[in-house]
Image (cartoon, rainbow, N blue to C red; front, side):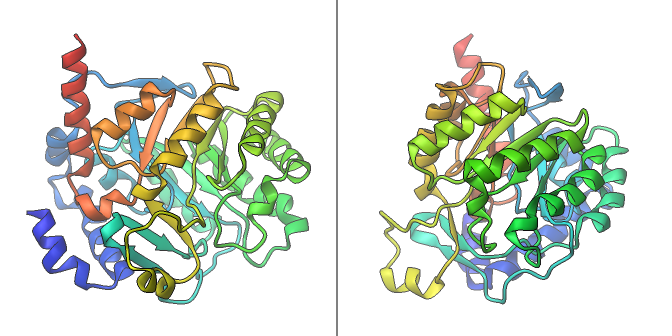
Length: 345
């Protein structure tokens, strides 16, 4: 039924409005009295669990940052069958993000362009919600993704990240430094090693025992990916998330006029799959087997998840296909992985 609903109703709505409507339902699941029943229907039927970052993940498939920016839907998303929820991106200072409209569907490509601009209520405002979510029984693993506040100059980025890290690391199962969104001026420049090394070192010190990962862009050159991977190993981070959205518009089937009308922003969804997979393989060939590598970008089916796991991903995340697959997307992934697991026996 969902493809019909999307075609006839949701695709006609402004994408951000449609997201807020759907998210309202997700937030209501735990309080509506049937969230646990939903979880019995969506969770894996076989043992798909993964041990990583000192944590137990019921399924390797989770929600990438950007869907639940303010940690308001963690429990509902877990009840839909996701094994981990990465909230954020959260910033030290609350900010409204970029002007509307800022989210655009490219339906023929099963893709999205966004220039949200880290719209969120700030790190402090998220703390109590994270505390409540952590206290909930049967919750998913909770990652927290942090970024630079727009009002903060690039040269002051480390101090800005440290505010968020100190506020949120104690309430996160793992923390992610986001230096790869194209929608905050100057942010991607922090991926340059002379800036990235002191930033990650300082945040690592502030995190204490909370596992720390860094999220990188797919638009880096291969040699830049390798250098960051080597830096992660050298300074003792716990993992890498590859990848964020791309600024490339190559190979799209959506009419050029539609793409141009959407304007600047990060492209996510199916067109990102090939590059995301290539970056995963490159990273895995240069880091120890025990380093956590989370693959994101272009994930839609259980076969996609299995391909990333076979290529060396520890965990896999998705976001854009949620818009096209609907609320039972995680269940579809889990059932597909169940079938693949049984077939290997």
